[in-house]
Length: 71
Image (cartoon, rainbow, N blue to C red; front, side):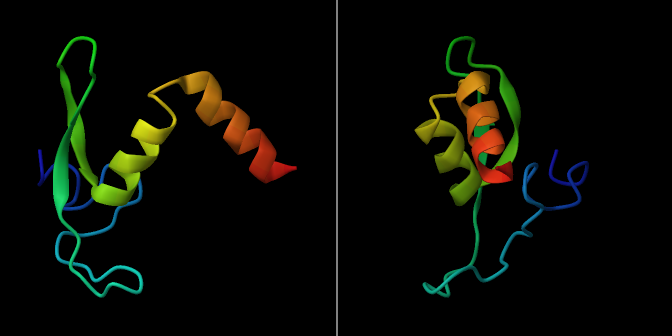
């Protein structure tokens, strides 16, 4: 899976070990899964994984956020 994703986050592409933000800590990829079924979707950096969680995995909330950012 890591190789198929180009050794980076499935959403933002951040590479494993890439330093991020002010913390300067290297990125770690986590296994993302769909909470209802447990099906593994891919590997995400902690920021993208948290973002999906904050939006409660709801596509309509993510779409609303995109519309907001585009306005």
